[in-house]
Amino acid sequence: MINRNEILQTIEMIDQQHLDIRTITMGISLLDCADEDIKRCADKIYCKITRFAADLVRTGEDIEKEYGIPIVNKRIAVSPISMVAGSCSAEDYSPLALALDRAAKAVGVNFIGGFSALVHKGFTVSDRRLISSIPQALAATERVCSSVNVATTRAGINMDAVAIMGGVIKEAAELSAGQGGMACAKLVVFANAVEDNPFMAGAFHGPGEPECVINVGVSGPGVVRNALLACNGEPFDVVAETIKKTAFRITRMGQLVAREASRRLGVPFGVVDLSLAPTPAVGDSVADILEEMGLESVGTHGTTAALALLNDAVKKGGVMASSHVGGLSGAFIPVSEDAGMIAGAERGSLTLDKLEAMTCVCSVGLDMIAVPGDTPAETIAAIIADEAAIGVVNGKTTAVRIIPAPGKTVGDRVEFGGLLGSAPVMPVHPFSSREFIARGGRIPAPLSSLKN
Image (tube, rainbow, N blue to C red; front, top):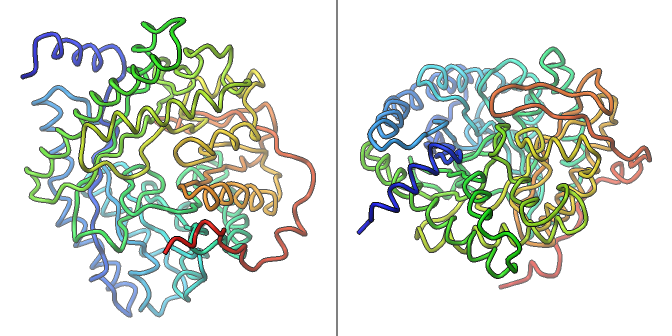
């Protein structure tokens, strides 16, 4: 039985510590929308999304009111569009992105993910067409998100795709220069992408997923930090146990919302992603958790160890709360979306190199990082390659969401608004990676991939 004290604790977590359900994401398969004619394909996509997701937002709002649990975002993830569009004869897939955008607006979700391609071992004709369409598609739409998987532990790193994505990111930034390169904030380059991730901008509905599914992403860094206030001076064993217990409570709430949404929509429940996803709000920061463990500023020596403890304890607590934990599940470290990370970057304790080291032990990777607008495409590609190597060698998901902010230089700030926040422009190394990226080909899979 749930006792009175637990109820009061949960109310306090919601009311004062920024606890929320970050997203309810409906995954929808669009594989049956394939058509040789791109206009017919776009029409099928629009019709299917609006039919399946017609009640998604209203259901989320009803649950929010009835249970008193904030549900910040309602979103949709669809099959990778490069697969859906494989039979289309058109060279430009932007009309499909426009159809996704119209459907997202029609049903009221804030983002729709899946303008995506999986090219870790090579390209199909459709993959190349989609990737070349990304800059225009993201610049012309408001709610469409895109992702490209360029590496896996089993396949290695497709360096040709890495090189291409460096140029795609530069072009996307230039086409959305009036919004600070906003198109790049909706684009993720992955290694080891997962099929059930509910978080944007990297969500897509993988080929191994059912026709339709509900996945939920929880949050709560403010709750974890508040719990650690009672651990001042305690050894790390106590810190880890405290985080585990808190993550259990957060995940149980996510499980409740996921199952209720699944029941009301008549759609299977997929997973709870128990990632600690921060916001720009003060007190809702992963960086604050790390500093509560005794670091003067996030990014200083000891940060990677603290983050490793946090990530592990969150997962251990979460898996006890739900039998269906999936997605990315861990701690996110997006710079622009975390007030503490922004502060660390501005005071100089948090650098791009340190962030890269931190991604070895946390969820995803270099996320929402602004760099000077004149950063060469080859440098961006090399940053992607480094991050992909971390994912491939360690058998984990890593990603890069980077914004070469047009007209901005180190020390400037780029404003995106809302959950995307604002990003201080961080320096990159001035030395060239041009010849390295020009080699192309594929970096072979590591020996650890041979597990059969």
